[in-house]
Amino acid sequence: MCESFASSELSAQRERLSSPLHVGSVPTMKTIPDSLRRTVFLAAIISMGLGAIWVIVATWLSANRVITVTAELASLWLCIAAVFLGGWCATHTREGEAKRLPIGLLAAGLGIFVVVWAWFISDLAFFHWKLRSVPASAWAQIISDVQRIASPTPDGGYMPTKNAAPKSVHELGLGDDFGCIHAWVESSSDYPGVRGDVLFGYKSRSWGLWLGPEKSLDSFCPGCRRALVAPKAFFFVGPRG
Image (tube, rainbow, N blue to C red; front, side, top):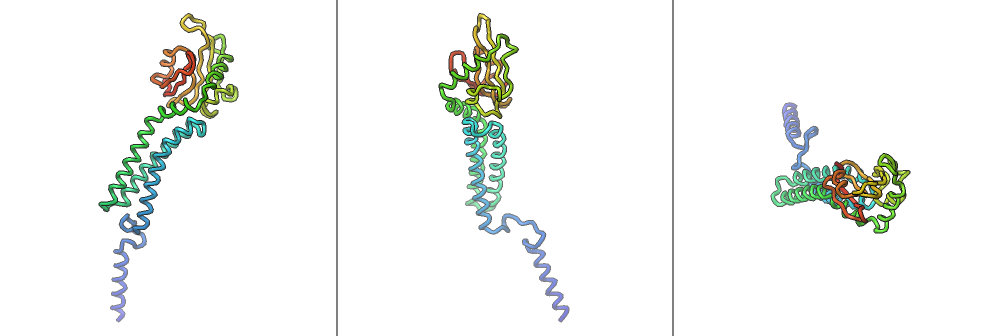
């Protein structure tokens, strides 16, 4: 009788150890309850959607001075991570299900496409929304303030801090993104008058106001997008040369 009891106990132990849900085993997607798999699948789809949408929304927010451009560019990496992680979860939670797997793959591919596409056109979108966010009357005031601080020589008329900058230039961006103002009086026959720039941003994306001939802007910011906002005054967005 003892031998029979010991044998039955040994068999029960073997069955528990061979079970995929025994303690110490690593659960797979097939061992997770279907209701939880559906929840993970929906959460993955939502995370990809939010990540793709945020890439576009973040550019609009930075152009309208709600968040800094630093925050916008940093959040793009989080969006990429969310989309890739969401895509992995979406495809693996429906692994082996012929009807559901294509949905996850399609959503993952679409999310990645939207994020990459928004990344490439972010400078163009920023240029468009920033240009629309600055009132037409503000350009004249910014130009007037730059002309007022202009120095007789190129080595003067420099404002490297946001605290000293005229209030009007903050129409172009938040204080944390401010770079500098540099203005001087040009007396050459090619361009008599005030030359200068109001600079915001960083090497990957700089923007601001340029006073002077357009060819000088090409050497400062090669290939940048620009718009003429006043005679010999350009609003520009692009990577700094």
